[in-house]
Length: 208
Image (tube, helix red, strand yellow):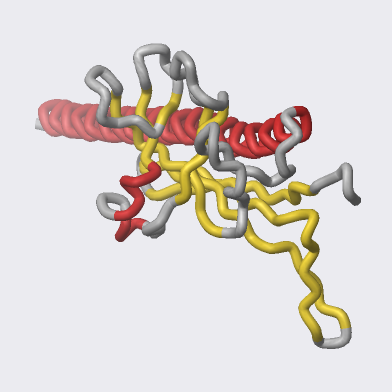
């Protein structure tokens, strides 16, 4: 009788130990899974952050290249290329799309277009933000052209904001005519709404 009871106790303890081992093993697997998922999410975010950072810097580089090209072409430093006959259009403030123009025979290698109806934020993702959404063309270049057949949708949006550069003196706003402030912003809607912006000043350094 004693041996039978002892054997039953051993069996019960064995089952409990097995269940505890299974529980510990399951918790270990769950922890590993959570670590893997977290790592993948972080890796994905870092990849998209790098893409967004490069796009934001590229916009500022294009703007600097445009200013320097205007110098070489004897245009006004803040001239916005739009046609071979109109040389009066200049940056006056507002929101713009800016990109390389790889179109054969293009008037200018940099394309700029004002965003007339601007909006941003999660509520505008499928509304006003569509006007500056990026797609990927057949050469794997980011482009605002999302209508051409074969161009693929992305979750990235980009624009620049141009503002007058000014400071206060004696309570009066003094505007600097030979420079303006630029905000280059990129938004991506991947695993949530994310954005990055870079600010700089573009100046007519030949006049300053």
